[in-house]
Length: 525
Image 1 (cartoon, rainbow, N blue to C red):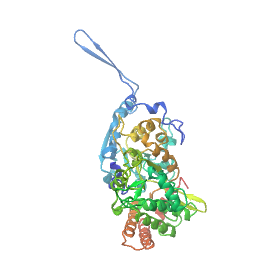
Image 2 (cartoon, rainbow, N blue to C red):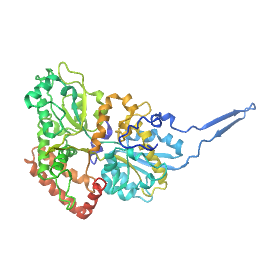
Image 3 (cartoon, rainbow, N blue to C red):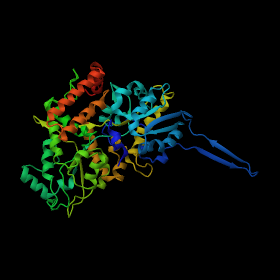
Image 4 (cartoon, rainbow, N blue to C red):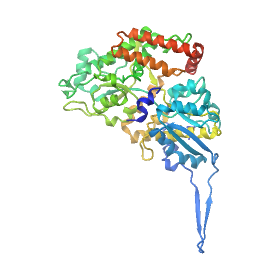
C-alpha cells in the first residue's frame, strides 16, 4: 500500500521552455537523461611527482550560484521523502545548495508546518503541505509569480495539467505552490468482464441496450446490479467460487464524503445549469441539502446495497484488496494507484477466468436535457511552497522548481525505477502522461496515462476554505449515519449537515468565508 493513501494522509487529505498544455513533450532529449547524467562534471587532474609528493589540481566547473546556502525542507516522512534525499546531491552539484530534509508523519504536517512557518524567523524554507489548507497557510507562504516571471524561472507552468494549476497551485489569482503529487480519481472497471461476449448478450437482453462503460450514475447502477452475483452462479461463462459485487466504495467513517461528492458534484451541477457549488456564492447558504444533494445521497445508498456487506468498514486497503487482490468487484472509484499497478489485478473468481484486464475511465455523471455533466474531483493533495521570511527564497524556489519540474518529476512519478525507489507520487504533468519512456517501460500504466488528460480537463475542486476539514467532517458524519441506518432519510441527514455548516460559517465569519470562497473560484469563474 502506498503510504500516502493511508487514513491519516487524506483525512484532511529543468524548465519546459515552450511546452504547451497537451503536447507530448515527455520525450524531449533533456528529460530522458538518466539522473547520473544530470550533474555537471567536476574536472580533476592529479600530478604525481617522483619525490613522492602528490600535488592535486582541481579544475572547477562553472560557478554555482548558491554555493554554501543551506535550505531546510519539511516533508512527508517515509517514501515521499525519498525524492528529496535522492536529488539532494544533484542539487548541491548544480547550485551549491545544501538541502536539509526534515521528515514528519502526514498526520503531523499541518500542525508542525503551521508552527514552523509562523515562527520568526521561520524554521523552514520549504514546506510540503496539503493544498486544502490554503486558507490557513496563505499569510505565511510566498507567492511564486515573481520567481516564475524571471529568466530561467518558469517551472514548466504550461506543462502542469490545468486541473492542478487551477485547483492546487492558484489562489486568489496568484500562484502559491507547485504540485508534487498528482492525486485525482478514476473509475476502474473489469474490462475482461465488460468485453465478455456472453455477458454482453445477456445485458442487452435484460436492459435493452449495449453493455458499455457507464457515463451516468443511473447507467452505473444498472451495470452494478447486473454484475452482482452469488457464489455458484455463472460469471464470464464460468462458475463463481466467491460472491461477486457490481460496485464498491470506500465508506469507512472519516473519508466517505469523497464517495458522496462523486455523486453530489454532477447532480448539483445539472440542477444549476453547470454551476457546481458547495455554497451559494452570494450568501454562503449551503447547497448540501437541496433536492439534487439528496438524490445524490440516495444514489450512494443504492450503490452501497450492491457492495460487499462490510463496505462501511472499507478504507484504502480494504477497497484495493477486494478489487485488485481478490477480484470480487466489478467497478470502483479510487486514486491512480490501481492504474499504475494494473499488472497486479487478480483473475475473476471463477473456475476458468479470462485474462485479467483493468479498464480506466471518467467517473460517471448526470445527463439532463441532452447534456452530460461529468467531473473529476481534484483531490486536495501534496504541494510545495517557499516560506515567507526565508533568508534564501531564490535558492528555496530553485529547489522546488527542480524537484517538481519535468526533469526530476518524471523519475519521481515513474518510481520505482533503477534510480528512484517508490515515492508514492502520481503524474501531474502533460509530459508525464505523454512520456515515451514511461509508456515504454511501464506499458500496464498506459490506460491510466491516457485517462489523465480528459479527467483533469473536467476537474472540480475539493472544498478549500478555512474550516474545510470541519465542514467535510460534519458531512462525513451525516453520510455515515444515514448509510448505517442511524438516520432514516437522506433529507434528514443532509438537513442536519446544512445546519452544522451554517454554524461553522457564522463562527468563522460569513463575510470572511464568502471572500475565501470567492478566491477559491476566482481563476476559473
